[in-house]
Length: 632
Image (cartoon, rainbow, N blue to C red; front, side, top):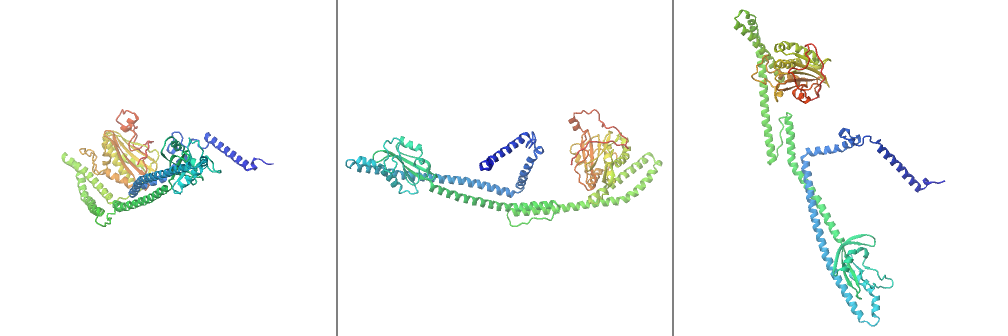
């Protein structure tokens, strides 16, 4: 028993059916959305919303492109050489096209002139042979007309062979009957009386275009046309065909054609193209090599200067360029070395001056402690006996003691600054709950706040806010911030916020006083800087508190940042890593508070009071805060 599957035809039909069924199932899955439920790109999807296959393809394509673009941007030598190669390639291509066009036109013109001259000679020979044959036939005896009619085909064959005998491989000769020819070509018994004549392996009727044959019948004279020669084997070859309508020995019209192939011209043109291509490649490569060498001579010193500049910036001030020769690059290297030498001398002078200044401050601070101790002892004695003095002297005793306290504080700050400048400040981190530090600071600043009419509010911190920090330094920073906020708060509330998240802890001190002008948030940490020089230091500050505070923050690997707006108060934020030595990535408290003027305008809120809307809390209580912000 046999079926379709047992024959090759049957197996082929079965395979085609299986393929059609698979394709139909695939189309159904595609239309049903089983292959890509959301499509390759879902509606409005870009970037991460694209299909995973599309994202993978984009990453696969972008990776080498990004590397190539990075290399292109960073390597000036590559850009110059590539530009030179492209421009030289364009010039070589343009010159090649022009030269090839000129050579082609020259070959065509030469071929046309030679073909016209050769064809004119052949047409003259054919006319002379027809005239001589006609004169010989007229002199014959009776019955000569029938005999000449019988030999007309042989005469035409002999004519084609004789004309083509001198142009083997150069041209071919074709004879065709004219459209208004009523008398047949007559040949021997074995020759088709209407058949055309041709030399070589040319197919005459297929090689000569019908348009040219019609032109010869309609208009006398010589006509030419570009066409293709069709060989008996089916091959074709472009050629120039020149034809003319003539008459044979019996006066019957026929068409005689000369077919000039372009084989030699094509070989010459191919030789010219190959020569130009080879020369062009060598020229482009030579120009690229020249550009590479020239640019290398310029780029190498520049790269050397860039590397030395980077090492100079890293502190290796002894680096110098190697200078050879006396050209412009050498002068550039000498100037660079002189600049580096002068820079090294200036930096050494500045470092020496800085060391002298730090040593002077440190020595003066230490030397002043001994006389200061003696003066304080005397001032304490005078202050204790102030009741026995007259009012003016008693007041002087009080002022003396107060200024001594300030002088002692200034000496302590100067000593601390000198330690930071000398790099001798040491950190003693330990797990510290910042809520306890904040409460101690609030208790210490409460008398000053009462005198100013301000309330100290602690917000956040229902949960412990613990960080590995030096409690003494953190308390000094917070005390500085809170005292400054009270002093500049103009009797408004001072809010202390605590928060912890993302491996960082933060404490923000917010006041609603005079605020900071644009640009002052950065200068506020400069030593002895004051926003208003005419403003007195009512709390006896030294002008170094914020400078020491920012150094304490940096020693912890943290940030101390300031924000303010004129008339809207200010906020100072201290951000520390939860674990010592970790890098900060953000802060759990935004630097700009939510009740700033800009945020209230964005929210559409209208301020109705100048005091903060936070509910007053006792100094020992805390409330939680939920706002957070991750910024660097």
